[in-house]
Image 1: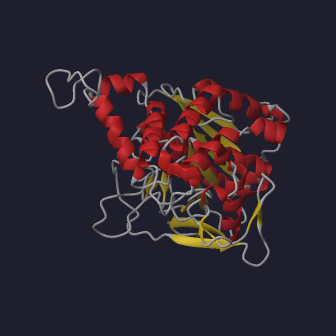
Image 2: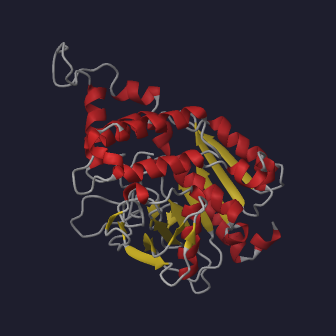
Image 3: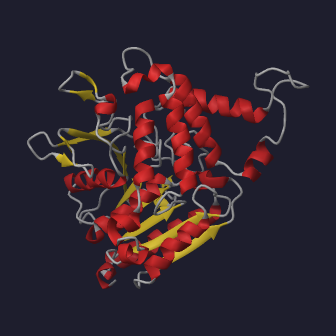
Amino acid sequence: MSKDTEIIDTGASVGLVQRHTFTFGKTGDTLKLESGRELASVHLAYETCGTLNADKTNAILVCHALTGDSHVAGYYQEDDPKLGWWEIMVGPGKPLDTDKYFIICSNVIGGCMGSSGPVTRNPEKDKPYGTDFPVVTIGDMVSCQRRLVDSLGIEKLLAVVGGSVGGMQVLEWSVRYPDRVCAALPLATTTKHSAQAIAFNEVARQAIMADPKWNGGDYYESGRPEHGLAVARMVGHITYLSDESMRHKFDRKLQDRGEVSFDFEADFQVESYLRYQGNKFVNRFDANSFLYLTKAADYFNLENQYGDGSLVAAFSRAKCRYLVISFTSDWLYPTYQSKAMVKGMKKNGLDVSFCEIEAPWGHDAFLLPNERLDKLIGGFLDRVHAECALGADNEI
C-alpha cells in the first residue's frame, strides 16, 4: 500500500491527536516471537480517537498497511498540513464514525514510526539493532496489538479493519483470537502472497541490499542506503497502481519537454513520478524496516499456519462476522484471492458479506474516496454495533 497516496478530506476531522507509547516486557514478560527468539521491553506507538464507552464495547482496531503508521486520522498541530493516512474514512460522521466508535491504530512491531524495530537501540551494543533485530511475522504484530488492547481494558473489539498488509493482520486477529473480535473487515488483501508478490518484494529488498551504503544493515552512523530504498519504493509503487490508472494519469506524456532527450534523464512523466515517490519515501522510512515488513508479508500464510494447508480448516477457528472487499483493478491481490477466503469462511457457516468494487485505480483504491466503499463499511459497522449491543455476537 502506498502511504504517499494523496489524502483528500471529505468531512469533519477528529482534530488534534497525540501519539502514545505502550511498553511491555520490562519485567520478564518478554515477547516470544514465531521465529523462536524473544524481545524484552517492546514499544508500540499508537493513537486513539473517539471515546471509549463505559462498557468498552465500541472499540475498533485499524491496522495499517506495509509502510503506514499509527497516524490514522486528525493532525498533530493546528497548522499541520499532513492529515492521517485514512482521514477520508475515520472521523465524525464518516464510516468509522468517531461519534460512535473508539478508534485505535498502532504502528506495527518492526516498523520505524515509534514502535520497536531495527531503528531501536540495542541495549547490548548501545546502537540501533539494524539486522540484529529478530525477524517478525504478521502473527507477532497481532500478538503485540492484543497486549495493547488488553492494556486499554478492552475484552472484545467491536471490529478489526485494515487493507493490504493491514488486511492480513485483520485475518490473523480473526483466527488467532476468535473470542476477542466481533467483526473483521479485510480489504484488498490475501491469505498468502502469490509467487509474483514475493518476487516483487524480493527485487525491492535486493535493491536496498545492493546499495553500498546498506553495509549489512549497519548504516545508522555512516549514511543511509537512500538510492536502494528509493528504487525499492519505485518497484512497490508500480504494484499499487493499475494499467488503466497509469494510462489515465501518464500515458506516454513527456515531462517538461517537447521531445525526448536521448539520454537517461526522466523523459516521461511516469519516470519523473516514480523518482519523486522514491525520493520522498527515503525522507520518512527506514530501509531495514522495509526489509523486515516485506519479509513478514511474504511469510504470511493463513492456511498453513492454522489449517494444515486448508482455508476451510483455518477459518474453522473463527467466530466473527466478516465483510470482505476487493477491487476490480487490484492485480497485487486480485479478487480471486478474496473469493477463496470467502469460500473458506462460508463453508464454516460464518456470517460473511463480500463485495468486489468497480474501481480503476488499482490496489490503492481502498485509500481513495469511494461512495460505495463508505456505504458498505458504514452500514456493516452499524449492523454489527447494534447486534453486539444486544448480545447477538454470542449467537454466531
